Length: 66
Image 1: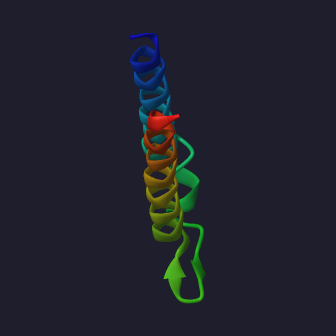
Image 2: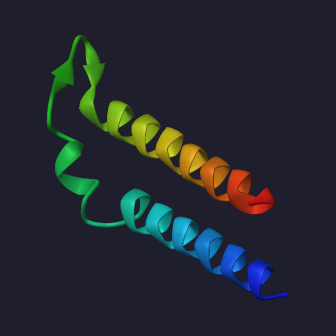
Image 3: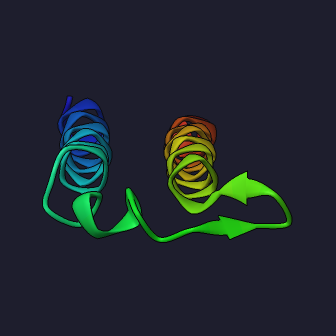
């Protein structure tokens, strides 16, 4: 039982970090930041954060068997 509590806390931390990174004033300066290799910097940031959240959740869930 304590192991599942720790898992829930870690997944909640990943979720809150995702909310902070995706829906915060951190995103606003990137709207007019320009382009990098022809791709808007905002899109690169959003996809990088999205991939990071997926990787963090996968890492937390892979530790389930330990």
